[in-house]
Image 1 (cartoon, one colour):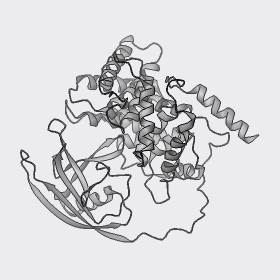
Image 2: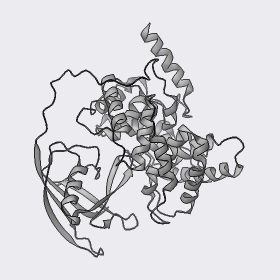
Image 3: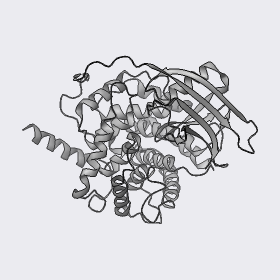
Image 4: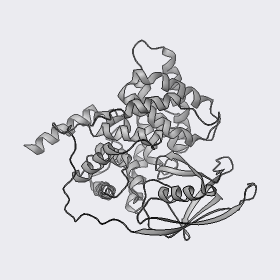
Length: 417
């Protein structure tokens, strides 16, 4: 009987969802479903008691239907107990969405996020497009909670986007589409019709930009930006002139999975909802088992309690020798951190010990990415960025907050792509 109840709940969830993707023409063939199941298990296995709680992974688990219920409980518990004081707007928005998809009350996190967005403004009129990724998440999270009170924030945000002339960023464009589609579909009755026109104009511009980056094999931008782009194109009310062949995109992504390209938990979290026919707009419609709304309990510990991790010494070097950049430097510092720490911990410890190692981050679909070190910032116009290496091996695009490592030598090179 229990399995039948779960079946009915999943059926109701599917009906209640808001995705407009045509399942018949753009779904995973049954023969290739084990590929999708395999990467989902890989993602879920990344959830451990010692890992940093990643809300994107919990959202993906809840949209897809979690296999590892114990990992789902653990991640939910850790996000509910997480100190939000140091979270960026994007991280806080993801946390609100993750708890919403788990049928948990985010509590005062929503009001705090609302207040932060009321006070938010870009650093300059032509701030880089990636700057808008976190605020897009915030508009989406707030829209799903209360579109009426979010309307003034969304209107101001849309006007800022229209005035910005920075080069297009795929992940930001996809998240803008999801956020403003939510607002477009939920404009309160009696509101000015001009609001719909405003959101529609931004959505039309972004959809055209996304469609211009659809490759002949169906990949949109690159394989890792395709997941969010698929979500955006499947829900946007403003379809671009260039028609999107969803089936071709799906076929190519499945081939990439078969080749082992999706092994990082964050890359899996971005593609998994689309593989399951879901989008972030489905977050409020996740069906929960009756009685599941109570305070979550910690999973049973089947393994002995882990011992405290030992410290390792990381030799951290920052290097800028690019021509045309005024400040050249090559500085090294030794920092002591716990084994298995994320890159962000190393950078924070180095910054604490020396102002030369001051750094800034930008919220992206993969998490926090280092955008500036020692006052030298990435620049999309100059095609420059900070690349992190362990020896000669690049780390995952400078993702600072989620990926643990045990490298003893880290180098940050300011370089061009």
